[in-house]
Length: 221
Image: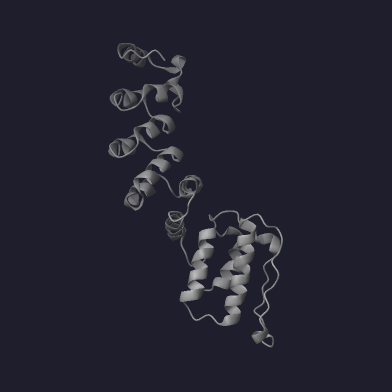
């Protein structure tokens, strides 16, 4: 793995957890000489400073034992190192592998939940078909977070209805009046009709069938 090349060419797209991964790789894997490691760690240090909001450029580290050795040329511009997310990916890692790697790293962070929700919301590959294929990878909380940021079909919601938080479905998903009436006992009508995303939550948009159903159930919203 050419870590230096990744840092030079994709530095602005790297995530903090990816920098942790590279540091571990430098320390435990591969045959990297001292000068190569020095250049990599210098770039990693610069990226971490940007993540922390420090716009000053760290001073170059001196290595008196390597004064006569020709350094590896670093061509990356400092202004190009501002991280902007991870969508562009890392060379030698597919987009899917990068997503799994990033989620695994997030699970170890203190602000894991807020990071996860924001990250998944921006991943176009995470659609219903993809989620169906990789459902077992995600923890229960993660599945419910996905339900709150990704649109899902009624067949999918029906299939996993027993495993998904019903209030998340009521608030964040679009579904038919028929689906609502079928699952009325599980879907809080206050959430569905006051905070949900369905167009028919407004009285003037409801069918006569739903109006009659709600009156019979004693719902006056």
